[in-house]
Image (cartoon, rainbow, N blue to C red; front, side, top):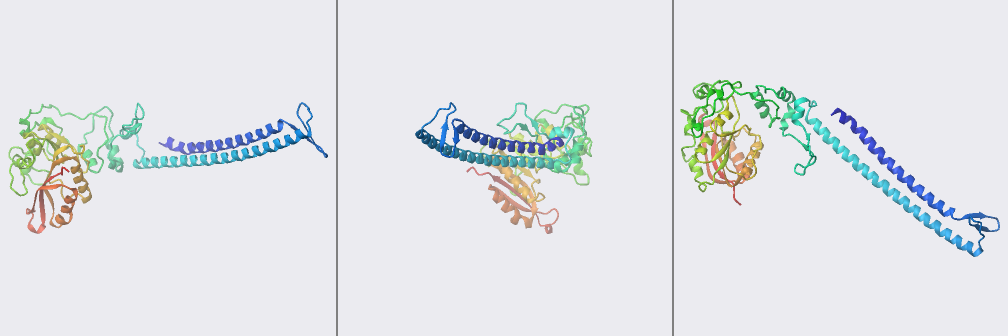
Length: 449
């Protein structure tokens, strides 16, 4: 990078020198042509003048009559006029060339300035200068076959979250490993980096560890409600070191994210979305009944915990991808052990689906007032984007304060443009009525026109 930056001033000086040299060359050529034209006109005849008259003699010394002399004088005068006119035109042409070269030089300087700004911006993104594995991971890399119209470039830029540049020390630590060797045991550190905006993380050239005594997963459909073997994952990153500990968290004191999600036998997971109370709690069957049979086929559950929503949908022939974070628990590994598709993705990440492709999107508790308003609005529009026309957005127990409901969130939902299929709001009373906390559940449909 230092080498490239040091070359830029010299390159620009060389370009400027070449431009000036070209202008000088054109001017010299123009004057030379004019001189030769005048020389050619006077070399054809010789002129000798005396006090009493003129005698025009060709180089072969042939004498001319007075009439011939007059004719020659007129011809010479006409030739001089033509040469002067040609000279003026050449001078004008030279001026135009100089002007054009000046514009060209200015354009070149402007382009060079833009390139410098781009380089400066790129340099500013990564301070200090990238080295080693991080430099390779961030790129860009030249394409072996050169420019491709599909990319509009001759380079390939690896996808790296913009927040990565704000935490260079953490990023250097994340990329500090032996290429081709074993990856560090840094799951929680990596996840914190993701949550800071470094999402996606750079790729690494190392091998993740496999647990000792790994056992094959339970086949479907039994896997949907079976506890996986403890040897199916690495436990280094978690407080609990086995699934029994996770399943018993509901009985212990303290706060844990999705505290009873891992108890598939005796906890609330077994009964979720099975009963419709006509208020906040909708049942899966009631939601599916709002659409023609079989038309809800694929979907997404945002912040789906241990994957129970996807499991219930799987029982009904609907494939649902579940996004989840590993907050002191192997949520993604647990979802996968049930034969479901996990996606380690934060709420800030753009949904990795094409426009108008999903039949249903569900979210419970995750989309709530803890998210900044602008980010929440972007997330809602992103959900609208990935749903097909007629697709369903099931907002499950959205939490906010009563003062926010009608002033902030109802206008926000109205602005997105969904049709309301169901809409239910109730007070959240577990901390008392004075807290003025509310839940909102809604079934919203993307318009077909």
